[in-house]
Amino acid sequence: MASRRRMNLKPGWLMLLLMPAAVWSVPINHDGASQEPKEEVQEESMDTGLYYDRYLREVIEVLETDPHFREKLQTANTEDIKNGRLSKELDLVSHHVRTRLDELKRQEVSRLRMLLKAKLDSTNTQSLQMDHSSLLKQFEHLDPHNQNTFEAKDLELLISAATKDLENYDAERHDEFKRYEMLKEHERREYLKGLDQEKREKEEKRMQDLKEKHRQHPKVNAPGSVAQLREVWEETDGLDPHEFNPKTFFKLHDTNEDGVLDEQELEALFTKELEKVYDPKNEEDDMMEMEEERLRMREHVMKNVDTNKDRLVSLEEFLKSTERKEFNNPKEWETLDAKPAYTEDELQRFEAELRDKEEELKRKAETLHQEQELLRERGKALEAQKREYQQAVLELSQRKKEQQAAVGQPPAGPNGELQFQPQTHNPEEAEAPAGARNSLPAEPPQNLPIHT
Ligand SMILES: [Ca+2]
Ligand SMILES: [Ca+2]
Image: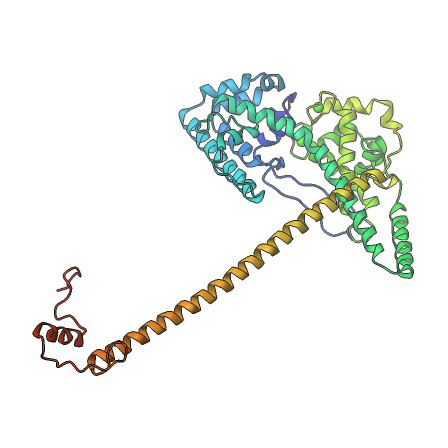
């Protein structure tokens, strides 16, 4: 692992993917024997959360099997990656590796095609002639102009898309959280609306009390401050608070020993603080809020400590941060309950959006219902037609039987009239009824296959 102790200048996600199948563990409970056993979250490696995560991971894995490229990947810095110097090295990898990359790209293109088809099907778009190549252009993590081979351009696009998308990822998580909170409030209000006054007042009071109860928690230390780290040092690591040493602390919490604190290692440090505010056993504590709080804490520390903005905290950056004034005298940390995640205006807009969606769903359900009715009517008509047809067939066969009976035994003619003509009057005519009497042909028809 010593070879990894060097300045890391590549995007954090690339570092994570380069890790040799590391086991990640998030320490949750280290204290008190009365607590439940230490929980461990184990994965092969971190999921970037991108919709092309698998493709990204597989491409890196295949590239790593090439000794030349692996070497370049290990020593490349952000500059090499950004200006495409790394991607150009692709021309030098072995034919075997290129073939596997081509295969991965074809698989990815076909997966994207399926995605597009599913999307078009669900939006009910009549895609008479689906132009896949132009639709594929919306995906930025590969070159859609060439759908069969993996080229330097593909690697360049994959790296830049992943870097950009991961930067937006936290923003999307905040957004999602806000919508979650608004939906929660919307449902609460709808629920209260449905109650009679007495019950409503009681419920409102109960909810208010729960909110108050949630707010009653011990003071939360500012993330990344000496007070916060000391608490982890003492309670999680079980070390003497008077011997707190930032360098030792850093090494202890660089759990995968790659010389940097990544986002997960940082977030694990906040568990102690978060447990002061959130308990999964309490009705008033929302674990979604706990994860939002964890994300805010990590962003706060990254903002102050990660000076080169590679989403990783190096030992140097960490030690520098401990020399700053805020390390010893931080501003008080405001937990999420201090202010609402949205304004009343935003909630109004969100509710209007919900109503629109509901209306649209209703309209769709109505159309479906009408279509169903139409189908049922059509089914009934078909059924009636079928019965009519069966009746006609029945009558026809009945008539045929009657006809045959008539031919077999005159005097009854086809129309029931009596026939008195002598049978032997015309020899030609006399032979015809004889043939008709026996309906089986004497010999098999010429056009049927005869099995011998
Ligand atoms: Ca680490
Ligand atoms: Ca950094």
